Image 1 (cartoon, one colour):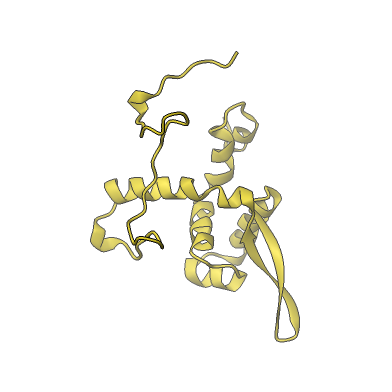
Image 2: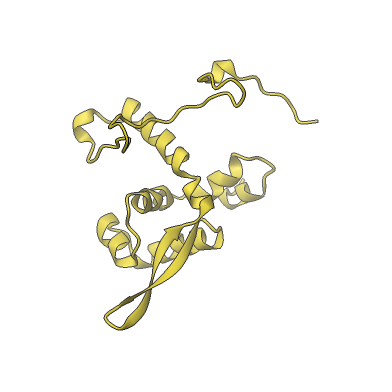
Length: 148
């Protein structure tokens, strides 16, 4: 099945995979969560071509993950990219990937930045929990049933 068909599958995992699965998209979102907002800054920090960056930003704009916000510089109106509510809701997804990556793919000394809770200074990790009792869950704790 072609990758582009994932978006039309009746699955709440395949649709996000179609949007986020392109290799630059998650790195672009990482930069946005780190505070990058301007086209030139994305290009400089990511070493991404203008055409690929334009394409990725346009997809995220079309999907309402990002919005363009005007600002003025040198007497000209330019635009920066900001997360929408839909985009901000991707934070746990990126944190889950980072949590997994920290455990399985990178020794601590390779990490270029750390994340800390602003209030207490603790580390940041993603977790999956029950919506009723808040118990932390693994795949072995979850039962899959068909919708009626």
